[in-house]
Amino acid sequence: MAIDKLYLDLLAFAADVKPKGSLEARMIEFLEGESSTESLDSAAFDQVNGSNMKADYLLGGRGFIAELKTLNASPENRIEQRLKERFSQSDAPIIFGTLGINQVIDRLPDREAISKMMIDMAGRAIRRHLQKANEQIGAIKTRLGLPDAGGLVILMNEAEPLIDISSIGYTVKTAFETVKGCYPHVTNVWAMVESHRIPMSDGRLGFPHLHFFKSLERQAELDYIARMLGAWGHRNGSKMERLKHEGDWNKMRPIYEGKTPTLRIFD
Image (cartoon, rainbow, N blue to C red; front, side):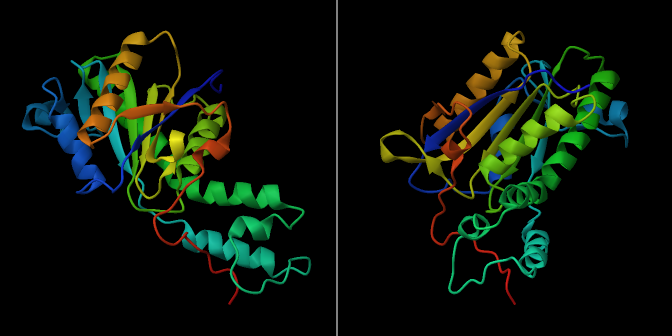
């Protein structure tokens, strides 16, 4: 059975430059700086966990079981190969010079299917991470006797330009809506991208974040995540702001520093 409803908040914090240090290292330092955080890799859990599957952290006085996942597998080669196959067909346009990929595929009758293919390719790692994290969080809930704890998956993309925030958003949304059981141990997903920015108000640009949650009734979880998001923005030198999106994926349009990523689809 798929989920009935999934809620989504789009947020961003304005910054002139990318924060220093690796995203994963900064996140670990951020989580472990909170006094109520317990690392499930610590010696205190060696006996109970052994070599069995486990998540990364207990947060908020064991109100959350959290698992960190880094998105660093580029879909570039797979996407290029599929596009080369499509553009070798007789109805494909002949292209001179350099054009954005959307300008090219918009000329094709199957443009929607091609766009979906590209998103699916970019989202493969995300779906694998969600499935694995659900198993890891479920194992800790059983092992530590925490049946009511929330499950938080933190997805981090520091440098991969082809996995943009809209691809993450679409993939997480469709995964929860279509996967049998809809990851029952995952109640929240926090996704963040530092490979690009998105437009904010007043012409500013910000690093995007998405918060997905299943229920408005788990208010304690929502309050805790809201405090985390605010603290993350403050830690990185700016206020975290909620952006109105009203279901418009264009609100997540990526803006890259320097050259926009390109794909080589013609030999």
